[in-house]
Image (tube, rainbow, N blue to C red; front, side, top):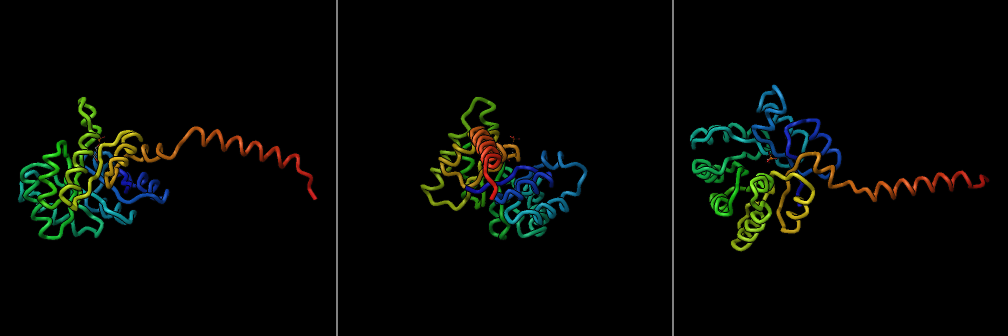
Length: 220
Ligand code: G3P
C-alpha cells in the first residue's frame, strides 16, 4: 500500500518524507488555503521537489474548457504532477482528454461506486473516494472502498484506488485489508500508525534494566 500525505504544508511534507515511507502528496484548494499566501504553481513545484512520488494538484474550473486549460498548465510544472479533477460531467470529459494527452489524473470527490466506474472508464489514473466524509453523514465509507476495489479488479481497470478523507488509523487498516492501492492521510494519522503504548512502556523498561545492569557491572 502506498502512503501519501494529505497536506500542502512544506514542513509537514518534509517531516513525512524524513520517515522514509512517503510515496506521494495530495493537495486540494482547502489545503492550499491553509498553506497561506503562496503562488499555487510555484508551491506545487516546491512540493514536487521534496518528494519522489506523485503530487496531486487540483483544478478549480468546473467547465470542460477551463478544466483542460488548468490541467495543461499544471501538468508541465513537474513530472510528479497528477492533475486532480472533480467527479462532475465536465470533469469526466476532461479525464478522457487528459488520458489521450498523457496528462495523469486523480479523480476527486468520489462518493459512489457508479461514479468510480465512470471515472475508470474515462481513464483516470487514481480515484479518490472520501471515506471520512461519508462516515460523517452516517454512511459507510469503507463499504465504498470495498465496492470500488471489487469492481475494478473484476474488470481489470488500471485506475488506482486512493482512499482519501482518512481520519484515523483504523481507516488505514481497513483500507489495507480491502486492498486499496493508496491511502492519503494527514501527517498526524501517519504518526499515529507508528505509535503503540506497549512499545513505549517496553522500551522504557529495557532502558531502565540496561542502566541497572551497567551500574552493577564490574569494569575490567
Ligand atoms: O484527500 C481529500 C481530503 O483532503 C479530504 O479530507 O478530512 O477534509 O474530509 P477531509
